[in-house]
Length: 492
Image 1 (spheres, one colour):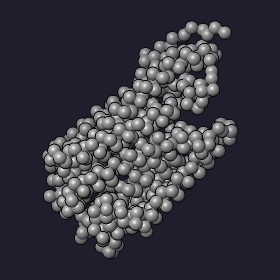
Image 2: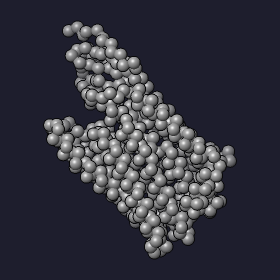
Image 3: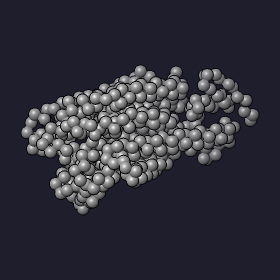
């Protein structure tokens, strides 16, 4: 478990990078406009990159040999081509004009600069997906320290790039290029480190065990496993652009709208600094409780570890965001922002302090569903999140809530709705597993029970911590106290 702590600790530091990007723009003469331009372009890019992050789970759960790795990589390239095509449409067609002018109500100069920024960031999803794809394989081998170290080096390279470019003329002539260049240098550095680690550990693994290229994995099966995760991730990423859109339209595209978007661009990465790394808890159960894997880690150990992480993050969040003066000092002294803008960030960050509760709750249940390869049941959570988000953005302005507080409140409502939906999906999945388990033990196998989803029910823990094993016509159940109860011998 200590190696997983390293990964989570390192992932938390990646979120500092977003404020480094903002620092590269806050020194420009038209800092507010630059923050709004990059904020919109980068959130659109993050929306496109979000589904590619789920290729980490593809390689973690589905990939076990060279042939399967190649199939997953081909799927990644095909999807990347679609994203790059969309970026070209935004930059050079009326579709992009519709987004910047009709939806966001931006003026001509700001809208044109935003479309160009989207085009410049169009290859980020590809490199992002390749990095996570390799990281998933390394997590499968439990090389979490390497994955975390690559993320930290990524941040260090980006920080050096930003502050190096600030001393050059490009910071004054074309300030938006500063964060764009930093994004590419960092993500390419991270991919290079992970790929080198992959080559090394792949060679070591081949010398220790026999590899086989026999596999039933196909592009279709990868897509069937990936698409529910991609939809959930896409909805999570598109939440920010939708929030920016509603907030800007609510304020009528005025200077207050630009200021509100700039504040949201600042508070979102700042709030995620404390709890963003909790999303890495999703990888715990697939990595430590995989089928036929000899391990001393029980599901209750992971549950207790998640609870400890929750209490730690809550203490940090309350200390940083509820004690007066800490936030304003950070924005004014570190980022060089005006005191007026810093004060506007206080209320949104106070709302962010309760996000860790839903993040841990959601991650724990999602981790179990990933291990069981039951990703389809996660799809409704994306719909619920979007419904809650839209309701708050439509109803709450009529109650007097506007600007950045409205955006963060809507995000919290979406988090809560998604978390409850994932919990319900976990309960339903466990109930179905328990109901079908006797048929599996008695050997009443049908074509359905031999499918890829039901195959993984053997030797895996249930949601409540119990584990059901099947071996040599004897069913053994392992409970929370790690007691082994031999069930009745199956009569043939």
